[in-house]
Length: 201
Image (tube, rainbow, N blue to C red; front, side, top):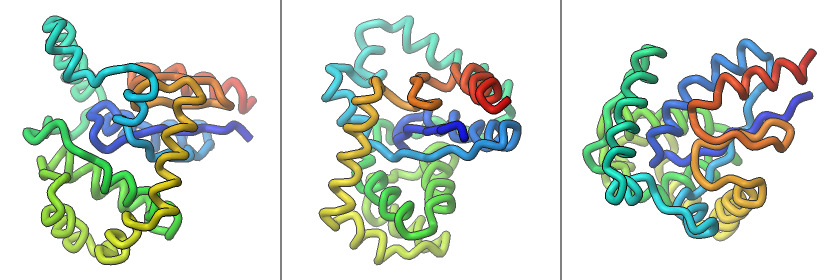
């Protein structure tokens, strides 16, 4: 069986756009992705990388092209997307919540709800009260999730995931691993799919 890993952070707009296409790849290839929640800031720190927003300050044309590229991608795939006016968002609690959700059987719903809240509904998802409201509205176990984010084992797992991503060569998100081979960015998804199919024959 081909190993397909999707490395993501809710605070990354490209991660959201990649997330929207992963189910189609899973359906066409019959290979299920293993979602790996990471802390993107930790990856940047470990790899001496900087966030796109920082690089755009020094290379304005890069920022302008990023907006154009995102607009094309959204139109091509018919996606709902609103760039969050609260960007950048501190996702530490959200990513710990993802680790907790993955270990407790409601990961898919949690990921769907959080991604939509950030990149469609324009919620300020680093505000504790906003997070609680969103989780409650979507009938997720808010109290348990928040307790989970303070559990040392959950904290450690997020660190382990982040370190794993760096060890595999990741320097940003989204990143994809196909049997350990790294692909970076939403633009590589066709190559990701092609490789999975070639390995599945």
